[in-house]
Length: 110
Length: 113
Image (cartoon, rainbow over all chains, first blue to last red):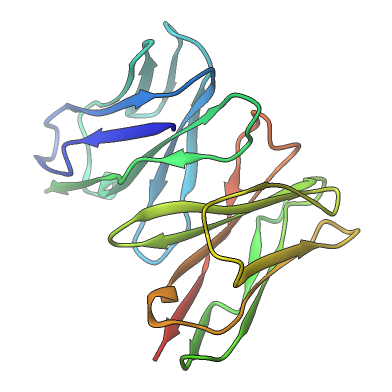
């Protein structure tokens, strides 16, 4: 069974303090790894898709990387508006469903 | 391009009742997936429809069902509601589902009393 584990569960940063969020996964036949951002009371917002080990993608202060066992979401010089829950999900084999981790709640203090 | 829309946004029901939720995907998207989100279990896959056919199903009881129409709009139904069905129900659409990105709607918040 596909498994996704995210750590830490919660992270509090000072504005400008860079850090990384971890997503480790166990799947058979990874087709894609997805990062989403979710604000309270809203649906997840798509951020990145990574398909193969070694791949990296960037968007503003965010950079996602992928290895054969885990993915990192690096946040450089975060701002208070980056506060949200960040979700990692995998799609594997012939199945199109997404298997999600429990998410990491990021809080950035001004 | 308009995003995924879900109606209603909020629902309050009592145990034993049934409920129908609606989802309109992004124009051109043929795959619609449904997820249940709770604080304890996180996001869990319910089922996926593609071209009016259920293509995948998660580990939920038969009280949870769905369908897709020819215009790709989808509905999910929950019969004989239980307290534990209280959750945020999210719909996601994608071009084909494999392995394209899925784009989520705002969700329907269901409260069962």
